[in-house]
Length: 315
Length: 315
Image 1 (cartoon, each protein chain N blue to C red):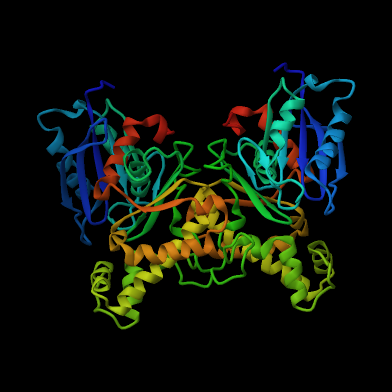
Image 2 (image 1 turned 135 degrees about the horizontal axis):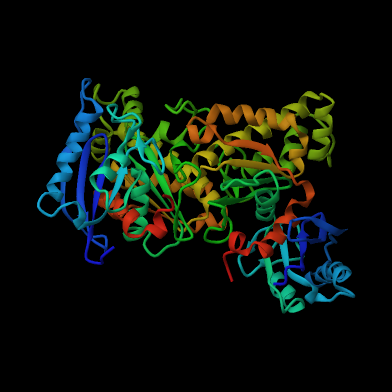
């Protein structure tokens, strides 16, 4: 891999498709994004064409071989490492062979696909809030709650690529049903739509109000909105206490849209974490906001290619 | 390390001190055990002399250099990897430099000390219920609840050597206070003394009755004893559901004294696990009884020496 070449990074989510050039130092340039197409009649091939058109903006003129590789973060679930993706929020793709399709377009360089929350965790470890630490749990709190796990300086994948997925840690065994089929999962309480739904159930907002509206109203002091963020923050604190006891990490980096709510989310998170984290190795963990913002996923996706021995341990 | 030499393995707990010769295939021979001395006046040096006398049984005649190394599992907490131990149930040792003392007696071979529950997990991965699997959580349910974690075929230590310590995963945020200072930890519900105390609080037994008495009475159908094991089993199932979502392992191996209670513990465990494990990668995990019994810790301690690249990643 010539030292001068950059990585083409792709971030595929239910709201937007983003691509960017990332250099060997993790710096992002020439980013582009388009809304993710939706619609009942949208099929997988049409969506793929949208992705191809986005990629063409970067390869036209310079060619596919001008990149050291292609790194992709995509909404889960997916099969790993073969990268057949079935993103919850992109119904047009079910078992879509994303990695194979990209390999056909980029046959001469590595193409690596991982869960978008894993890519955020990798990005935060490499260039963000976990930089210089060997053991980092990176989290995304957004439409879902996911995560990724770096231990001993290397990404841990687990059996199916889902290690670090904190969203289904149980925060209340008698809590709300979760879409996974379980009960009382962190995600069932703290994902954005659950935060908004709970606030609405308490008389706040209108049908269609979102977690962002909750955060906005909470910042203005609306008591139900404040309570909704408190409830989510406490659930996050409980789950993070469990995770830090079990994982023995240095840092937990919390990103994703809901984490933008700031102290209204992080203060109750910290309180619950302190209440439940008793052992020294858990109390010593720093729980911080992710540092890279919206770029974290693309930086991490690029690192799958650029720092393969650390972050990619598969074929 | 000559191929013919065996490892001297040591298992230091609050009830007994055990030592054995373990060969390169993980077979245990020539085991010996003595009760752990206790008493308010017992000091650390006197306890150390008991350990030395136990070791002398193995080295007298053949000499210290006849072993490929010394592997030790010791009750936690401890500093890792330097092995200053402060076992909760051995008050005579607080910050006792166990590894250094052993190195002085065995200056020419590796001496490695890890948490006893970590050694059980290593033993179960190498030769027990997790054999042949890359991702294994090993658990000990006894006077405390601990564990160790193998991911990608290698022991994961975390920042302080406590990765895999499932005992302080929160199973009920409103649950009983835990000795760690937290609340609702698995250990606060499922450790042997907590099981016995709960049963006594419901009118069962006498002061001094133990978890073993609970298990015996439950086997005879005593309803309070059955309920006490059910409560512990459910807490284990919730914690294991959280852990399998977060860790993405192949197998969870549950050992320790309380696990001897069999289906009266494992049936409610499995029910709670099924209720809370929703994601495919968690539902696919096998939760099984540990296979090596009382020898697991010594087999694992030996593996710290014999399979150092897999299980020992420190100085």
